[in-house]
Image (tube, rainbow, N blue to C red; front, side, top):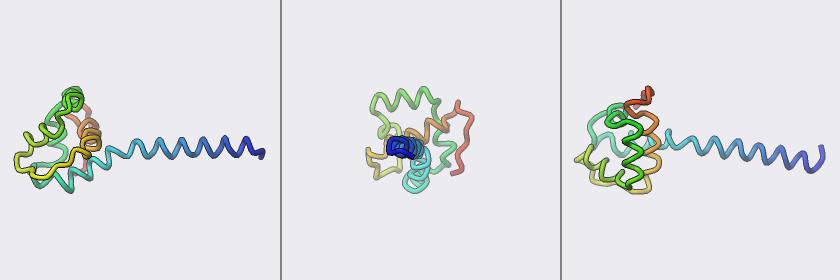
Length: 105
């Protein structure tokens, strides 16, 4: 193999690995919900995500009101970090009421 071929194969592999990492946010969001929010919310992740449709979750995120909505849905929630927004959004968007998907938490 020439140096160029090796470089091309390495670049292709790197892009494949990065793509896999980018899709892991749904799993991270599910894990965050299970560990940090489930107790304060009092219901499963499936019920939580199904509180809105995908479009409604998208509007909430675009408006920057994820933390406000989470505090509304989970009034016992005392500790919430804004850095969780992206992962929680990916989770609720994936399992929203109109998605047809059901999480395992």
